[in-house]
Image (cartoon, rainbow, N blue to C red):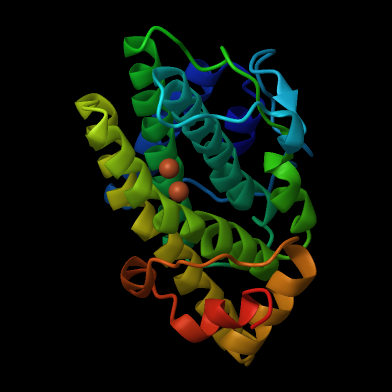
Length: 263
Ligand SMILES: [Fe+2]
Ligand SMILES: [Fe+2]
């Protein structure tokens, strides 16, 4: 089921299939007959539509957030992040299916993939309401790099994707919500507020299962986290941090502050 989502290129079809598979998984769990985990060979890179054109980050045109065009560019960038997040969550399920994990691990990533599928739809609806659509603008080409960098190590994947990248979303989303509020764009404010509320859980899933694996291997979580992020994440962490939401998600300050450049 995870590989099917990864191999679907059209974003609407991908997110619809993702939501349908999530519902099937949930029903199987609620009925007490969980679908077999099995094993799978996910593609190196998920299938993607012809549009958006994927550009090197430095070639993606700079946005001016004070303009309507700038706000469309920002919503487009969020939609692109959400679509990547759909694939990232199904990829963790398929790629690490050989690592024995409690079923709750799969519940969490299926639920996160379901959320991201909804988030892509919310952002695409905002783009449509603004006379645009996902694919109308170029997008960041480097989004799958974190997945490639951590394709052989589940703990590295959890450290870099939910605990660094998705945690970064908690830091920057309140500023984006404020920007759309000032512009009077209530639809985007509502969509981003939903996204913001649900992303805390994704970071928390990362922290929960990272700590679980540290416990299984008798490792010091903070030491291992620092080591894995330094080895697999290119770039330093950037304050200001949303310390309150990071705490909600099980990320204490001594996990991220030492990874700030110059710290
Ligand atoms: Fe999301
Ligand atoms: Fe997320």
